Length: 255
Length: 304
Figure 1 (cartoon, rainbow over the protein chains, first blue to last red):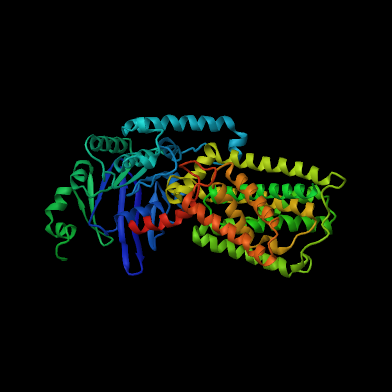
Figure 2: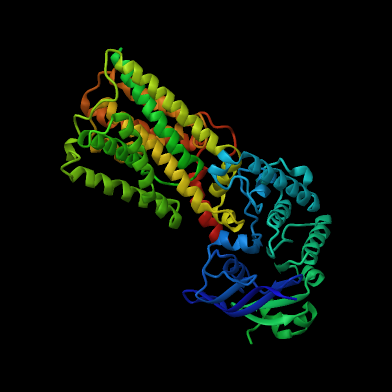
């Protein structure tokens, strides 16, 4: 296995609050990493650092062999990074299918000059993207919603649209921020299946989730974060046997 | 008759201005209020080129628009770093700064204004010909903006306006879109300014201040932000309304501030009662979601 993402000595603090304290992590191709920890442990901040929402103070992030920690967000995404958001962040005045089309790797409307002078390639790109979007909507079980406004769907459905949107670009690394929040019933199985399929296709997947049984179901390796530090790594059962970690998770006394 | 034609020229100019402002503010959600300064740059540059370098007027008009387009970097570059309320402040700074320079330079005519600008066309039916010309230009402006915002490019603009961070995280380049929107919108404003200058043959700095920003904003808001026809409706309405008031024969001490009162009242009324404007539908794109975007953004930030 080869590392898709390699994080070395990553540090970030906001004033006195340390959200990443010399974090060292790597995500391998085909691997699903579960990221757990109490609220404020720095899980979402780590996603924000990797995807470029916030710049790190020190350390390095390598994505598919490219040093990306100083690159703008869209640049990292194009190298091969896709993420979802805790609160879905749908484009609220757009339909579901349009939400997905934005995320395609070769976007048809990238420049006005292209639209004006290369009509045919633009049409071809749109055609490809639309077909891909339909397949993805089918996979997350929301094909019938494609023309609805994304913002009008339920939270759980928006989560699934967010997942489908992140899959549009065939990124080598997927960062999924609480994909299960608000998701119930059959959709639960659907999401597990989709995430597994993506890992089998050779992508590195990292999942932040509070639902421990979901993490146990899906992850190959689980990483425990607390106060910006990676405290432990192993299987969920190994981590939950450690009484110190469970105390930290559930807000017991500090060690 | 001449009076009506002059009002129609003003309507045409304002349609171009409001339509291009709508591209930046309504569709792009880019909170710049400096639009009148590109109007000024087009007017002054074209006028000065024609006066001092004897450049033929049609050519100087195009050059004025081109210079406004290039100088739009003055606002589009800050917009890459700041957005929302902060961009409002930065753009006001840019606008007032350039206006201050124009106000104090000898060769721009300083506060007295630039006079003796050669006119575009002469002859007995000069105004009528000019009205036809400006109608064609205004129609082209509306169609150009309509073409930009529909289809694949428009989808990207909407997504950027909805959520720039999520947009960037999907690999799309927001910087390019902002630069393009400012360049095209400002170029159109410059064109409107140049046309104005070579019709009225006279411009003064005070035409391009914050009051004009407010007037254009009112046109966009009242007509319907991020709609194709909204700025047109707004421009027609808010150009003719002040003209109509002049017929009431009120004393100047009331007339002068009255215009400001009307604009402010209209904006506040529409903000609360009909944020999508006169032409906006019930949902999607239209109206003032752009104004609430920065507030929503901060709320979301705080929540995460």
